[in-house]
Image (cartoon, rainbow, N blue to C red; front, side, top):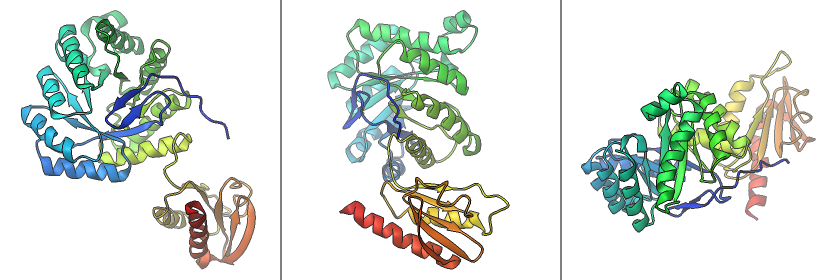
Length: 358
């Protein structure tokens, strides 16, 4: 199987998680609870951990939220990233509260001197910064120079902030260059990756509701990852952050960058299909939630799309009008009644699970 050749980036440690330096691409999301509500926010962090997130970002809009962050850090099973806008003093306080990383948009915290001072303080705590350049808050002179929020404008903004940080010898930095336009986002990351080796947080900002946001996120993030660009990802959706984690994990698994569990293959159906395939696929999808192993499972609707086209599957079923077949890596092993397909597939999965444990 062909593998993606990933861009070389310098390593940056965020809590106990390594970003860049050849480490696996990490998944992160952001809480959408009131940051001042300790109980509700901690509950969501725990749910994100259970869903498979590697890192969690928490908004720190005021002093109260920064104080709550200190309590959250103690109880969180994941490294917490403080998200800061406008008031650099909140970043200082978040460092004191134990945040594992500070995410800032330098365009709205008050200029180079404040950025440099924040970096000095972050260095004393051995905490990295994420420089989050966003198309919606670019410096006015760059918008004028480039005729808008172009990819080149995003990159020039990031390089300007890095010049400040590098000037004081601070290199524990992760970069993001986000726009709501997918191609602008892709172009910006491509341009930056040719200039600097800092690890990249990739995503399409303001992607929208799941119906469209998942497509924008998959296209933008997937295109970059397929080129080897990207060290940590967030799928931005107007939805539960748990959904963001689910989609991000699917994107990574689809590119074989990380394997989180079974991979379900199913045919799109056509006039040859003699079974209600959609509910059958849903039943198998539900069944697979109980298995945490790297296995390909196929659910096909006829002999044409059966063992032949799903040859790469470790195990699969192909349904007919009254009977169906069970196959392993393209070879038929059993023919059973249609109503037995799920039961027999589960038996095969249990056998694979036992071998996986051994």
